[in-house]
Image (cartoon, rainbow, N blue to C red; front, side):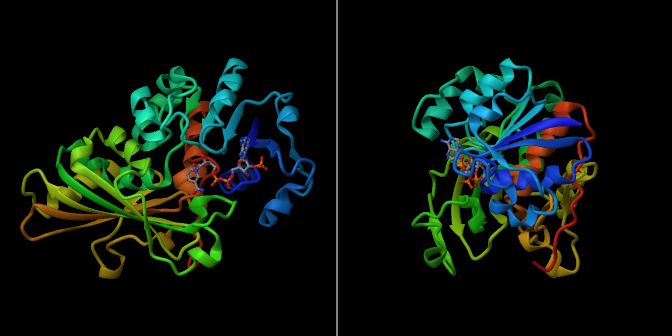
Length: 346
Ligand SMILES: NC(=O)c1ccc[n+]([C@@H]2O[C@H](COP(=O)([O-])OP(=O)(O)OC[C@H]3O[C@@H](n4cnc5c(N)ncnc54)[C@H](OP(=O)(O)O)[C@@H]3O)[C@@H](O)[C@H]2O)c1
């Protein structure tokens, strides 16, 4: 068994890493790190994990650093991962970060989107963006996988076959997100009485996940916009992209592109053309799984296309992709421990 430390283990994404590791055949959760819950049973923060971890207690950061581990999951707020990445890499551990600290390649992009220079710019160069569908071979060779933005990964997975074919002329992305995206600590925007039944649009144009979309799809900011709407879900991200294509296409060409991109992917699949109510994906179909789904509708003029994709933000949009990347870094089968079937209806 490979030994893992999970930092930010009292939070939403850290809890989801623990849920995956609870049933992982080759990686065990050796320590679950929390500053605020040191000594408490893990299941006090994550009651659904009581039977899986009856005896595991949260450990303090300095205790965690005394443990030798093979792989570290850093489910920490932005800005707090980088020093730990340095520390663990120097000890020879593999690192799967979940934060935004090393997602962007260019230090100037980082400064532009995060408002400050990166603390360790050399890590940006070293990290491989943690989406195996785009970087499978590089992840097998690296010791550092970056986190992925849940909205970014949903958008990237939906659009990369079209970007690869240079079909994207203009893309207007709307993302709808559930409340678990905001993490475990309520804020004025995420606290239930304010957020419930909301349709609140936030960060049009400037959401940081746009930087990842541009980087991974190799698009320029002039031709892509991203807006986010908080909707009545707990888990789930749905992306709707209104696209002007670079040239007119037939529907068969789009089917062919997606089939070629997804046919060998263990976790990404394509919606069927029929029945019509299943042609475009609903995140409700994916709850609790590491799966992503994409569908499209082409306008009869052949140049206007709507692409919709969906995933569970805590799984394929965070912990699931992190474990998938960890499997690759450790030389394990990529899908190991990630075969959860979605819960439906949820
Ligand atoms: N939620 C999602 O859907 C999602 C999706 C993709 C990526 N992510 C990324 O995953 C990371 C964690 O997100 P989350 O939603 O799980 O947040 P969260 O629920 O707020 O959990 C973060 C945890 O980190 C610990 N922490 C907070 N400040 C810290 C500090 N300065 N130093 C060390 N530990 C600290 C906290 O635990 P203690 O106070 O107990 O130590 C907290 O439980 C973020 O970077 C986020 O961007 C989240």
